[in-house]
Structures are given as C-alpha cells and as structure tokens.
Amino acid sequence: MGELNTFPVSYKVKGQRIVIVGGGEEALNKARLALKTTASVVILSRECAAEFSVIPAEFHTEFAPSLLDGTALVFVAEKSELADQVKAAARRRGIPVNVVDTPDECDFYVPSIVDRAPLTVAVSTEGDAPVLARLVRARIEAMLSPETGRLARLAGSLRDRVAATLGKIQARRFYEDLVTGAGEPEALLEAHASQATGEVWLIGAGPGAEDLLTLRAQRLLQAADVIVHDQLVPEAVIEMGRRDAERISVGKKKGHHSFTQAQINALIVRLAREGKRVARLKSGDPMVFGRAGEEIAALRKAGIGYQIVPGVSAALAAAADTATPVTMRKVSSGVIFATAHGANSEELDHWASLASSGLTLALYMGKSIAQETANKLIRRGMRPDLPVGVVVNAGRRDRSLYRATLGEIATDGAEMAEGPAVIFIGEAVKHGDWAEAAQLAEQTFKVA
Image 1 (cartoon, rainbow, N blue to C red):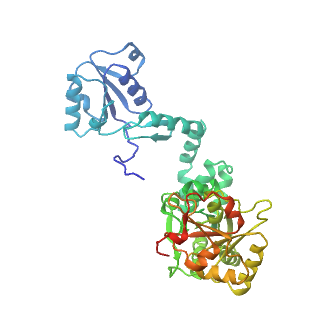
Image 2: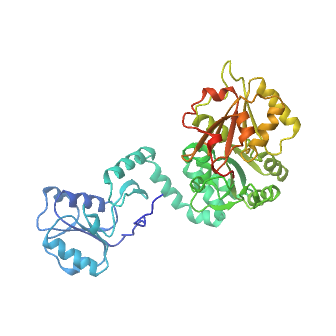
C-alpha cells in the first residue's frame, strides 16, 4: 500500500464562512457544495454568471481583508489579480486555500462526497484522478440506502442512554446491530446490557491472497474486538480487520513456537470471558491441519459460543494454481489430505495403499522431509515413476511450481523456495498445467 500525502479529516465549518473567489462554472459548483454545510457562503467576483442569482450567498465585487474574518476555507476558482490578493491574504492568516484544478497550489483537496447527512463518505485521489474518485463515489452511492442518514441521526439521539447503560464493547456492538437492522432500538439496548460473554470465530484466512478471503470472513474481521492470528497469515489479511481491533500474534513456525496450543486455548477463552468478540484467524481452513479441534474443545468446556468460517485450504489453492484435477474420472477417484510430519508406519502404509489404488495424495508440511517421505512411500509399494507436483506459496503472487517423479525426489531430494508447500503425488498431476514448473532435480534453493 502506498503512503498518503494528505491526512483525511472532516473539517468543522459550523458558524464560520466559506469564501469562494470566482463567478464561473467552477465557482458555482463549489458554492453549491458549500451550501450543503451550515457555514455562511461568500462569493467574491467582479462578474458572476446568471445562475448565481438563485444562490443564497453574500456577494462582493471588491476584496477587503475583513471578508476573511471568521473564514474556515477559501476556494479560488478563477485566475485574476483579485484571486491573487485573496490567496495571499488567506495564507497570511493561515486559512486553508483550494485553487481549483491546480493541485500544487492547494492546501486541501475536495473529495467526491456521498451525502447521507449526518453521514458523509469522502473519496479522494489527492487531485490525481478526480474522474476515478467520481466513479468510486457512484458505486458507494448505489450501496447506501437513502435511509442511512436517518439511522445516523437515530444513533446520535441514543448516545447518552447507550453510554450510561453499556460498556465500550457492548456499546459498539449495539450500534453495529442497530445500523444493520438487527432489531428495534429498545430491545437491542436491553439485550446488549445483559450480554456479558463474548464469542470466538475460527476464521479461515485462505492461502494468503486477500481476494481469496470469504465475504463472511471479511465481515467478521470488521466486527472483531481482537484478532488472534497465526504466523503464516499475511499482514495484508490481518489489516482487513477493524482499525482499532487489538492484534495478537500467536505465530507458530518450524523450530519456534511463541505460544503453545494450550496457551492459545487459554488466551481465546480469557478474551471471550472479558466480553470480547475474538477472530481466531488461521491460515487456510481452520478444520484442515489448523488445530481447530483442540480450540473448539476448550471453548465448549468453558461454555463459550463459537462459529467456524471456512477458508480456501492450501491444497485447493495449489490445485487451482496448476489446473490440477485432484479428482478425475478414470484417473483419480479421490484425494487424501495428509501431513508428512509425525506420520507413523501405519499411516504411511495406508497412504501408499490408497495412492496405489488411484487416489491423489496431497501432502502438507512435508518440504523439509520430502526425500525421506518419498523413500518410505516407495518402500511401501508406491511406483517411483508416479508424477509429483509441488506448489510453494499456493494462491499467492509469489508462488513457485516444481515437478518431478517420486523416484527423483527419493534419489535427489527436493530443494525449493521459501514458504509453505503442498506436494501432490499421483496420476492426476499429469493432467494439470505444470508448464511453468521447474524440474526439482535442477533447483539449488535452500530447503527451509
């Protein structure tokens, strides 16, 4: 994400003046915008278009310094000696000036505005692309009901009662439910006043690409008070949460566990007991190698409500990246999701038997022990010539693809780029698109 050259704010103009220099179309547009506020509008120009006759403003043909008394903002919409006078005087007084269509001379920019007073949505491109800003504004206009302003006024009228009745967390939830139409104000207020315990949402973050997050996951991240996330979840996904939500990393990666699973269980239970809504954000899908079962057991034992939000598992993202049909008529009747780490002899025998019967094997977390696992599978009867495809960082822009046979990995090992890998083994790999995949035996990357 790029850095902003402006700080977005809403500027208070109540009881002050907005001075507009100019009498043409651009000045008229700014006057109409200014009249939507409670400020008094002053037009300064030696000649105004006929359309100004219906504008309820104060008109002047000559500049006097007193015109800037109590002025909040100045718009300059013409090039003239008069305009130069006003600009200079305003800047001496520290009054922000906007020079229409001249970004370099502007102290502030006028965004495209969606008006649902008292709610406003401003879209700005810092003067670089005003047409784009207008197009984005049109989309937001279509999303927001005309009743949105009424809801904002209703929320404002209830502020004192809500503050006296509810704590900070319960109050925010009350307003969220109010504006989403979850019930009548009085019933909502009573319900939130009696609600002391929070809940936990086990959310699948997918393989890491922000646009693979589900709409439900996005919605709940925006509602969460705390986001408890794994190490593999990218910062861009975490930042999709509410701006003021607390972020807690419980990152676990090979060779380093900042939190044990028991500590994570205790953490999410404690946070929920404090009345917080907890987004437990996990890479991929929570129910596929996500240790969700242990966290669910802890939540059940504590009597805390929870919800599971599925995500795109890494193997499915890897299959999509390579157009590999992991199940295919007359080729593969099923797919096995497994993790090579900690696999015992009985599990290896089972995988080998199933894969030999035509199923596709999708191995997670097996990159560093790929050679060892390949040798064990061959010893248990899997064919050395079975195709193998590997996707590192599945679903992301920086993904890497590799191909080999099971025998080649058993002999030469599997050195790959940094990142989590999914290893496909089976005839289905032949039917994928691995044209861009590098031959594993030719790689010189260091194994993570």
